[in-house]
Amino acid sequence: MISPLRNRTSASAFTKGLAIGLGAALLSTAALASELLVWSAGAAQTPLSILISDYKKASGNTVKVEFAPVGVLVKRLADGGRPDVLIVSQDVVANVEKNGWTVPGTASPIGRVGVGIAIKEGAPMPDISTPDALRQTLLNAKSITYMDPTKGTSGKHFASVLDQLGIADQMKAKTTLGDVGFVVEPVARGDLELGIQQITEILPVKGAKLVGPLPDALQKITTYSVALGAQARDAAAARDFMTYVASQRSQAVFVAHGFAAP
Image (tube, rainbow, N blue to C red; front, top):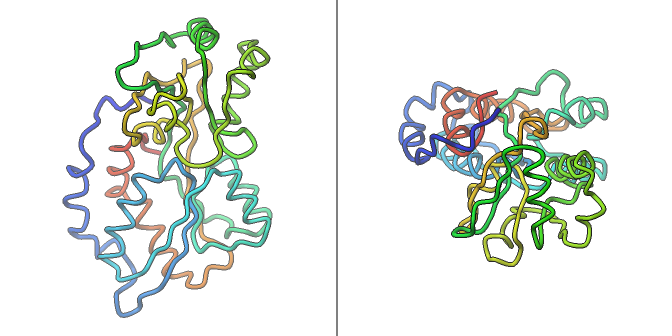
């Protein structure tokens, strides 16, 4: 079970030394600078943004990153999009390999994360400690939000949780489905009462407070992996970036922002 960040140590404590010795972990050099296109699941947005900034300084490579829910990324791949590097949930790795969108065997895990519930800072903490307690909290809530199940990992899972709890129909009228990004932002503003998303997408939202993870019996732990795009423009530079993102040094940054080690 993933802890809701008992050790919410500042990322700076993990990143101050990130550039030190980084050259040894990188295969490319500024003299061979490349431009990389990275597509990533939104769950990795905060730590990956930090890592990309440090990577660009150390390698000389340019990195453009686009964040979106996994379902959206898969649709873009199906529509012909071809990133150099892809970061997606382990659930779809076999699918993207089968379709020839990534190079088989290149996927490396970078971290695991569970689904949590958020409220507005200062609001009373609801009880979500057991499935029954969560069920009652959801029924009592005036409004909730979670990711559109057709687009994101957490939304797909939470829709199944509502089915398991037997309250899917009761919740429809007070549910606002999120589209992209941090769906708990309306909760932080006070527009909606409860937000459900992966923990790494709750923690960065100012004004939102993590109540905790879903109960163990209803939890989904998702592993995210980085993989090489099948049509990477510079495969060596892309592999270089992947090595960096999957390194132990980088894992400290992922852990500092809500992930558990893979």
